Length: 180
Image 1 (cartoon, rainbow, N blue to C red):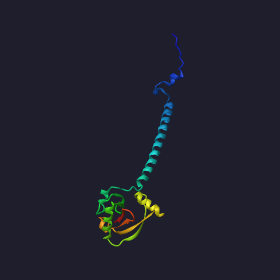
Image 2: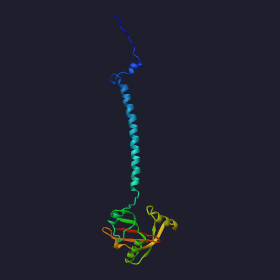
Image 3: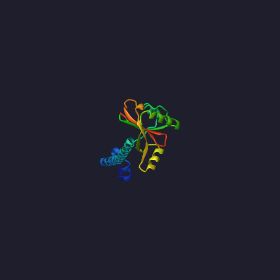
Image 4: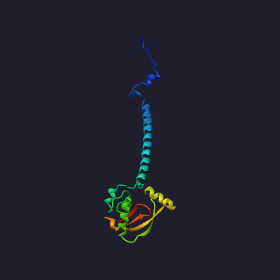
């Protein structure tokens, strides 16, 4: 009886089942897989962290509201506005830029004149104001607009207790500033 000794080829050694592979090869393979997936996870985590930082800055940015009905729940306006743009700091204040039709702007002017004598007012233009007011502010060279201010007592609802309303010169815009 002859016993044949067959040399194992490298291919046959590599193709053996993982159970029969030497432990250091399995350990090396496992370490490689963890390193690769661990790096991609840390990149994903870093990207998610950066994305959340980006999102938090956009959340904190001022985004004015433009819902007329929502504003009318907070203030009394005797005439229907054409357009509103406003921001609210709950429990603190509301700044609303309100545009009326030319007819309602005249009526609103007559209504606010009942509140008392006007005072001249200079208002710094905010970036969220309508384009017409921003352009008027740029023409002044100081990013401000001029108007006549009246007390806003007739337009207040709780919790707001004080404020003023300004008719912006040469426009149908009014700026309502109220606080609690």
